[in-house]
Length: 564
Image 1 (tube, rainbow, N blue to C red):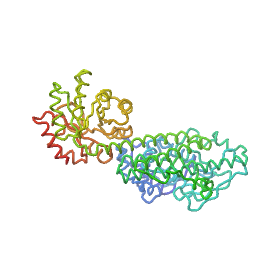
Image 2: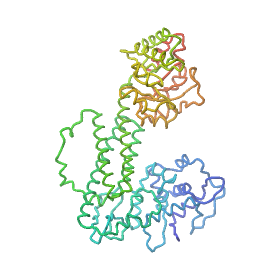
Image 3: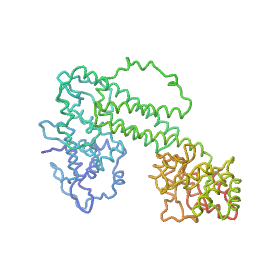
Image 4: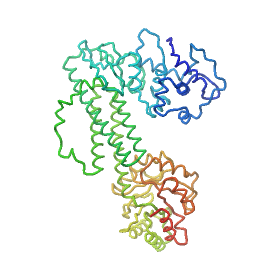
């Protein structure tokens, strides 16, 4: 297909040609086109990217293999450089979304950005992760270049109902007009989400369905479904905003805020399959019988936990309504809606367990790992001295003893810590944690999962997880862990490691994770300050205490340095 390019698009593509992947320039690729758009600062695409915080340095951070072309090609002013096969998808996507009619396509920088953001290629996924709302961009382009969008009901007839435009009602999506014509462009759910499926733009089963006869009662039924979708979408987004605000302002938890924000944005994008003008036409707040009906407990919250649970329930129930209506209106998005609901369940568990753990471990700063010692008497003396010194948590970590002997030692530690301010954690063995009456169990990345450990120790017991990188820490939060160990930080005298997460990992956790986190691995009085400087204020130690001449005194010195 013959294409024309605006002068701004040509300049952006010329700038893109000064970048390459690999040793030689082999045509414009999606990521180099992205760099070209950023190099054209006055274009609308660059303005959109800058509003998301995307600059050249941001792209280079994601694609460090990008390099300047050693010999920038000479670019004629009336034609772009050659495109790599990877970039063909950009124009396929733009053609799928735009109704060019009989006119040759004229590609602007906004069209290039739209094509980059469509589908599931690496650049498209990254742009959406960075906050680019594909539906907003599409609607703005359609409005600016004169192509309107309408929702055409299944089995549309000449008697179809088209929503009248509502001025100013949907500024975010940029929809300002809807043509009352069967020839207007109908956007499928795949197009609205930015994903191109095989055959997109061709006559699909959904499009064929649009050509059938539909009675007025059926149209009325569809408008009732849209009314349900509109109310449920509003409820779910409102509830997610409350939860996000709580995670942001009450918990100060960057990781949870990001997770909630991602779900909220994805839900808004999926909901764009139900065009706002039609939703507004179906909305009837003034005559909603439910506005005057309130449950006895609906207007009160007894605790912050009640506030979270009420809003999570509101979100989950509303998303289920959207999901069920989607099965009739836009079946292809029902699965995506369902998956969002499941993610909300996971997030609710993570937030509620995290809050409970933070409260339960609010005082815990010093965590000491002990082995079973050479005899019960030696273990008794050590543990009693540590409890007397005020150690907050003691973990029994022992690999040499048989189960019966290990259980006897675990019961001994439980007896010594019971009724004190010291918690007792069993390492690796949730079964022995239950039998000994321990306060919880600690597991590693190679042991049982949090899910399986929880099935054994129950809801009240603490479950801790060893983590060695930020992805494992994030996963532990979502898995429902009560706390995490972060390390190894330094070489240890009690355990050998081939790699060390180091202080950088501690800084990552301190900046992002609010679940109780204990730095571990070779920590002693000499390097404690460097650990605390990362922002982590809890430590787990072993050799620096239990191998000292006076373990209790060593523990007291660490407690003093920790402010406990």
